[in-house]
Image (cartoon, rainbow, N blue to C red):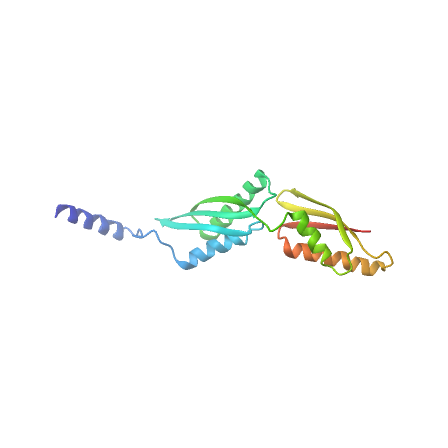
Length: 180
C-alpha cells in the first residue's frame, strides 16, 4: 500500500509541476522535423526518424541518405546543417544525425551521360567530370552535336542538357556543357 501511495504522489507531483507524463510528440511536430530534414539540400531520403520529448527538450535521432560522392567534411557539414535547421524550427533539441550513402541506380558520371543523350540533338556525351567542393557538385561534360547548327540552336541544346541534369541531381551548383 505504501508503494502505491508513493507512486501516486510521484505522479501527482510530476503532473502538478507541469511536466508531461509521456515522451510522445504531436504529429505536427514530427512532420515539421521530417520536413526540415528532407528539405536540407543534399538529403535524398530520411530512412529512420525517432523523436521523443523529456520535459521541455526534444530528442531526435535520424538516419539520412546522402550522395555517395560526399567526402567526410561535406557529410559532417550536412548533418550540422540539419541539426541547426531543426533547432531553429522547434527550439530546445538534442539532434543526432547519421548518414548513409545513397545508392543510385548508376554512378553520377553515367547518369549525366544518360541525361545528356536524352536530348534529341546530342550524338554523344564524353569527358564527363564531377567535382564536389563545399557541399556543392560541379559537372563538366563535352557533347557532340551537328556542326551545322546555328549558335542559337546550340545554346538551346546546352540549356536543355543543363536543365535535365539540374532537375535530376539536386545538389548541382553548376553544369558546364562544351559543344563540339
